[in-house]
Amino acid sequence: MRRLNLIIPKTIDTAIKSVFIEIQNWANNIREISPDQLSGDIPVDKLKLYRGMFSPSLVDFGEWYIPLALPADDYISFDTEFSRCSGLFLFDPDNFPPGKWYFEASMAISNASSYIYVRLQRDGSTIVTLSRTGSTEMQVVRSGVLNMPTVPANLYVEMRTNNTQAQASFGGARLVFVPD
Image (spheres, rainbow, N blue to C red):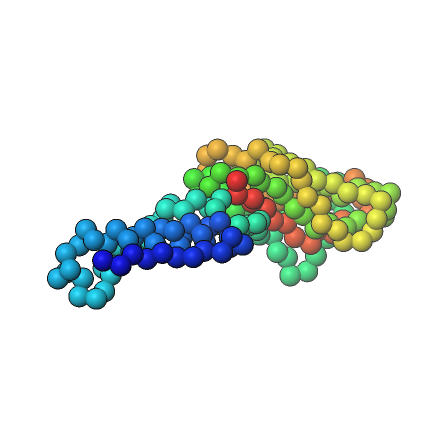
């Protein structure tokens, strides 16, 4: 019986190489099926890729973005108390492979000497607070690595300013996930 011997270039992605090698192994081990069962076709059950067969870390997904707030217009506030500027996002850690989490928010302040604060909340407790000052332009600020909840939790975003005379503008927020 002839064997399948794929020539895989060295420059190919590791994940794709793994898939090709797996297909080659299936094809070369198909002898387990009698020739009368083959009828020229490889049975589907010998070629299925099952969930979890390849680790997400094998495929270079880069960063995954999970929008938390996408206002049509900038959310504007003069409040010095935090107010919610997003809906709820039910975060379930079991739905994600191991990796690192970050929080990003797009924000601006009308007075360069004032501050704007945007924080990620979890069922009433703060996960991280971002702030910026010194420029009136809308900019994206990214947190360091987060300690995300280990059980399902409702996440939401709040913002405030430190000066009632300064207009704080919120342009959006998202979680960034980087698989290991």
